[in-house]
Image (cartoon, rainbow, N blue to C red; front, side):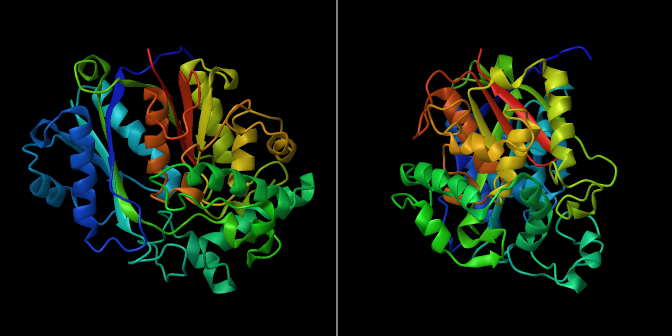
Length: 389
């Protein structure tokens, strides 16, 4: 496959505060985040002609257009798979810009996930509203697997047993992310680091896999990202962050959150991550050593281990030792989730991890990594490679 980098770039990022009770509608949160992102790069709502969000987002494109003052939108799209599709919003915006379908695309996500519909709680679903975009839940919820934590634990348990991974090993991920959150003023857990003993003392959610501190937050808030051509972005307020490439893969048999039906769970319960990694590296010509930072989707701590292996930062089965050796710390081989991630900063379906990648490449992050030129961002079935010229 020929290597071809995109001509698109991220020009602006914006967000609301991250809270447990926003006190306003999800539409207002979306509009505030969009305004913040446009202000960040010096564009106006009338400049926007494309919108991308999640199938789960409640803010309709027409309402967003009217409420923000956009004039004429030529491209509107939604991506399924919940947080697993976060990077797909960037992929779709990139594709629209590269194809000339739209000039300025805003990707956004906004919800009251704590004060409103709590995604971590059981919800009755049907084939049209199954959270992950399919009817998977009708086959597992009647048997007691009713929450994202239960699905994640079922996927992780065989992997953990095969490779000798303990809950204490998972705890090192949580401790690191809370360490980063503690020095990030935007994080919900700002000023609140934890120890491994704190992690081990937190209550079981799904024994013996997940404790409370292995789980991401439920958050209220919004995030928006402005994508345009690299040429146009150079004339705007911020340093352009190039979208070097993006990839998405849904192998046969994959269920986005109930992958425990896979034939082999011993190396990882997420074959889509391996397929996405392979395709991203093929499309961009990049390799693991080309990245100075990785923003990895962390709804639950086991997902960090499987992504480190899928993206070949370490070999299969070696993630726990790779983490224990300090390799994902700032100053290590591949620092991860320097904002605190979804566990420490906020859970905005992975979009805030994309914003942190942009801040790192601009040199504006609270926990800045030295000499960042390439960042990998992963979210389940999709990933993107970001960089600076």
